[in-house]
Length: 111
Length: 115
Image (cartoon, rainbow over all chains, first blue to last red; front, side, top):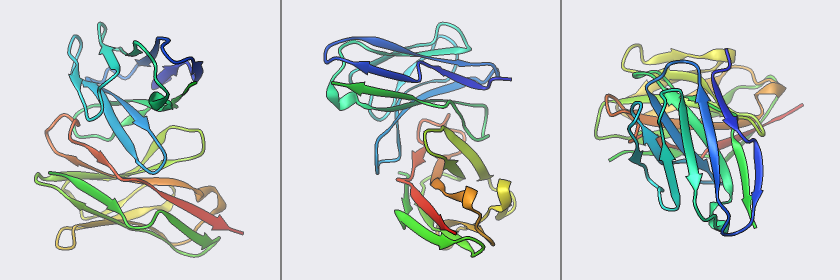
């Protein structure tokens, strides 16, 4: 039982490049989330999804897009990377009022 | 509106002594409250949760937290620290029945454990 799997684990991008982060879950959870973690700021919500085919903006959505074509996958895209997007990205899932299940993170550096 | 304040950015204890990590919150809704732990270069792991049942909540690895509505606090404690407890801890407030998009994470408290 893998839980929540994020790929890749590390990536270095040049400013202006694009990339997609993949989150895959095998728990059949309805809700999925993308967070970014920056030092001293806790986790901030980028986008989220309450079910297959749905997405919505979170607290810091600018510069990111998402898609959830299949229930088990939630993709986060950066169309034109900027140094301000250097961060650690976490995917999480949730079912009902239970706690979140997090992936192990993607460490992204934009130079 | 929701907010969460972790009152200490760093806490240092000796192995075998008690741990206290403090968290205050505010919420316009009935909140669920969580504590998560993050070890270096790892994801966040759920320690315990409060969802309006018993106010004293027991979690994994000997941790517990008490929900005090009158003080709007949800402090995390452990009677005896172990070296493996060294990590960062996050207090989280999540209004119930809102799909999680109003969830707020605290800034984190880094726990150091001295031998």
